[in-house]
Image (cartoon, rainbow, N blue to C red):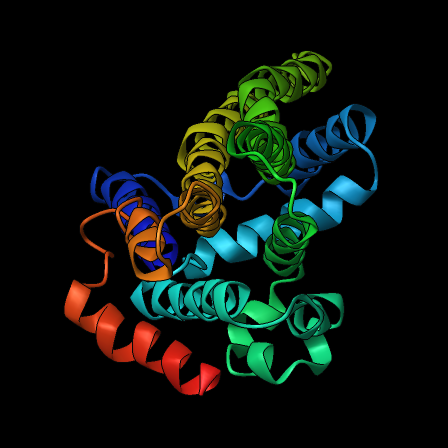
Length: 289
């Protein structure tokens, strides 16, 4: 919603100001200039990135447009799952916990947390490190190094669409100049025409520069920044899991280990201790019973 509102305000103000000072909005509509600019942009994107990146980038734009980032209820659900797992690790036989992490889709414990089941990347991250804890020889500093490496890899993968759009944003002003030059070349072919015709051709050429700069700084660059912000927020559950499980490995009780994870959440989204006790710890205790 914020993305749509920003575009409406920005583009509306631009067009409104242009019309208010006597400009004719229909002059801006130059479909072949749009074709040159965005066609070249698409070609550059295809050359610079694997074809699969196009699908990832569309998904990232969708996530950024709707603000798809973890909310307070998502953090509570994650804390509840982590507490239930750590409680079982401490109180139940190894084979019972293994049943949960080996087949989480069929686990009654994991079914209590449907949003985490939908996030396959986070689900696999949690299950992999619980398995390492079950092995019994896990040392905290080794697990921490392994987690840091995996989180770094996941972050790089998630940020690739932002980098790809940023490269296109950097190229679009120059592409606009290319379209403008082609328009000027066309205008020079009509140098013997009347000033009205020649002026229209030159105006159409200048629209290319305008569209290149506008699309770069008003859409692609802000969208790249928005995707980066949303994707960084989507990394937070991995950091919560890391801190909680490391605290447990280092000897903390499940309730204390959970607090290590809770403290990594930004204050604006961080559930209170009372909320965690009521919803996360309460749900975990009920599941353990």
